[in-house]
Length: 124
Image 1 (cartoon, one colour):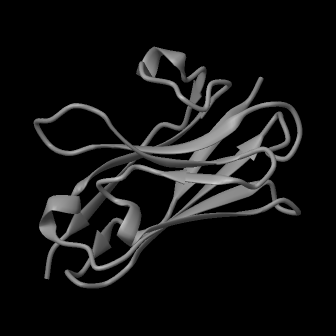
Image 2 (spheres, rainbow, N blue to C red):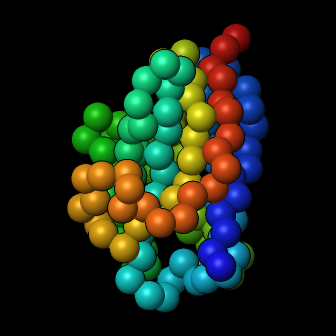
């Protein structure tokens, strides 16, 4: 059974960089055809895709966040990391890491394993 767990600070100041790590167990992030993703849900809004890092290390970022987003991985620790720079209060959300076999997934039902989510608040 694959398990994902997000970790990182719950409070970030405006203009700083948000950094979250997803630790994966029960499966390797560098084998098999999966895409390891970051998704968020702002308060009162729907889920929003941020981007992913694929099993080859290739990355994709949502166009609306691309200029501020970086996703990387540490295969020795079986972890992948999100960095979102120049945050504002609009980046306040519950952040999830998740796995999908489809690099062009258009439906969040196509993500088969999810972390429990972590609340990140952007505030001074």
